Image (cartoon, rainbow, N blue to C red; front, top):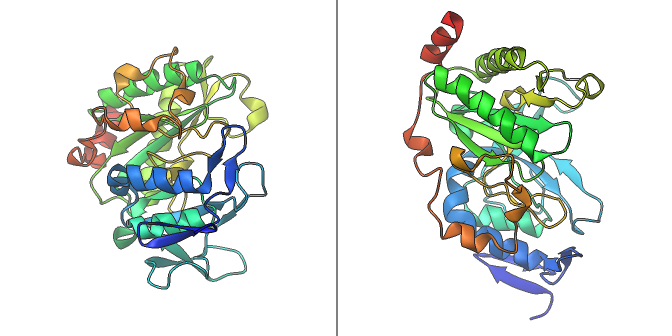
Length: 299
């Protein structure tokens, strides 16, 4: 029937609506993609607090961020109410990920990427990963790749196993799975110490300057994704960018200046799913930040 399509247990309205005009990718294509990748995506969204990035009319339409659960979501959608530190609302009732039904319902509302917290709802605000966001001021992934290798060297010295992925844009994300324990504030402080050390070792290439004007052409090492309700794009998330790039898990051997991250996109990602999962051991690799922090202080 024209006008609706059923994916999983949720009807997708206006499935023929074009979200990426240049490529012709539709809302249905996006829903089908998330249904296909969900066995892998679930690992990184299960019981995670989500921030919604809604683009009801696709790439070229008006988009907006939303934290509060939309009233039009299914009534049984899992949520987590969190007290706000400031602002007119005392609390926010966030959507919690983990089911295909929730994911497709979000697509139905025009949500393209998936933004997740480092903490699960049940253990909030105690994260089970540390995230580093490497943003090249030049706009060139090659610079992010070089920065990623510098960061990996530092994490290796701390005996921390790390996992890289494309951001789905021009940058690189590096994740470190950790045991639940430290608060988000403690994880943030640790990650800031790490990036400060790495940037000071390569001052002409890397920076922790929050001011864009002060960065020059250096790669910005962003640790702020580790704040308690801060989010990062999940692995296997489609981005609101031309060509519909996908934030793609990598092996460290893939992280080279010659890599073109746009090669991973909505149109061809099925090939990637047939390959070995480079993050298959992610949650078998929980590590203790207390031990890593002691090593950091002794370097």
